[in-house]
Length: 139
Image (tube, rainbow, N blue to C red; front, top):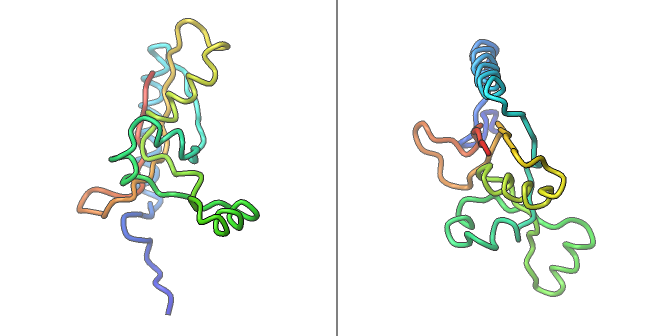
């Protein structure tokens, strides 16, 4: 028999808590924007090299790795190579830094941005600490 509850460390939001959460996020966005910040978005997946180049150690413990797909997975299996090539973001700092490094030539001199989005941490769920959460990042 299939387990019907959400996976450990993840949660569902019923309509009333969802509305309250959406209102809180609206107020946070409105506050950032009142100070001249603009919203932005980065992908939830990043290349593993982006996560592992600088931080390594602790970052490896925090991330969910995403397996290669199709022919890339077949080649990796044959060569006994690394099976994962992407990771789910575990914070917004690394993707924000990658975004800035990638686009700095076309960004304005004063770059005031915020991002609020979900992150995923591959650590044991604890009371009040989830594997999926929504966090802000400001640059």
